[in-house]
Amino acid sequence: MKRVLLTGAGGNLGRALRKTLAGWADEIRLSDIAPIDDLNEGETFVQCDLGDYEAVMSLVEGCDGIIHLGGISVENTFDSILNGNIKGAYNVYEACRRHRAGRVLFASSNHVIGYHERETCLDADSAMRPDSLYGVSKGFGELLARYYWDKFGVESALVRIGSCFDKPANRRMLSTWMSVDDFTDLIKRVFAADRLGCPVVYGVSDNPTKWWDNTKVSYLGWNPKDSSAVFENEPHILEEVVDPNDPAVRYQGGGFAAAGHFED
Ligand code: NAI
Ligand code: 15L
Image (cartoon, rainbow, N blue to C red; front, side, top):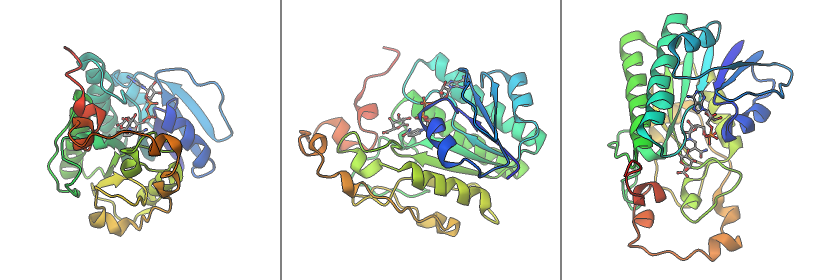
């Protein structure tokens, strides 16, 4: 890769991927609405609000791949989500098409399908059942990506990330956890594949309990190496009290599904 754009580079995942993707591309063009001033070799930075069409047009010019992480990453007001996630996704895809900026890895979320119950095993064709306005915005991003694929041939991986943190913070994340190393490997495979198309990929490690089936993207050759099993006996996991009738336990989206409407 010559120049890859990483939006949301100042966030949790952006900071982690800057380390694991170092040296992978000739240049990683970092971007965020907030400043970043600790640039490493091979990194450049453009501060940009994803909701600003003209700014995103120039941000994307000259890139040959986009890892689109930027935007609102949890439930929030509709106005914030509209700007960061809905306008932001449109601006990124339109800029990608106009500037022929290659493939997009779209950071979708498990909250697109958060109202499925935990006993249901999902795959790429399962219905979207968003558990939040945030989840709805990720569904919009996925549909937008499909539109750009069908109409213009822009390839995307729609990665429904589970919980990508250093370790699972609770019992739910024993099922949803994805390590940063597994995510890094997925990113490299998405951009290296001979053909990508526009698949849904569940962003999850090889955990003992599974809700999601990635068989339909076996052509990517992504076989996660890490497992949440190593965290199963940590005190915060063992001591968590679970009520099976709690909506946060019933639904895959956990607390997002259990929470009230954000605007109320
Ligand atoms: P984060 O909230 O730490 O990072 C998001 C970044 O986007 C922040 O640096 C923020 O400043 C930037 N941003 C927000 N609004 C913006 C705007 N209007 N213009 C430009 N930049 C803007 O989130 P995190 O955890 O790093 O997640 C990255 C992406 O992955 C997000 O899209 C999130 O929805 C998605 N995701 C993450 C999961 C996880 O477990 N970390 C799980 C599922 C999805
Ligand atoms: C997400 O979509 C969020 O961005 C992240 O902060 C976690 O809440 C994650 O889902 C999760 O479901 O654990």
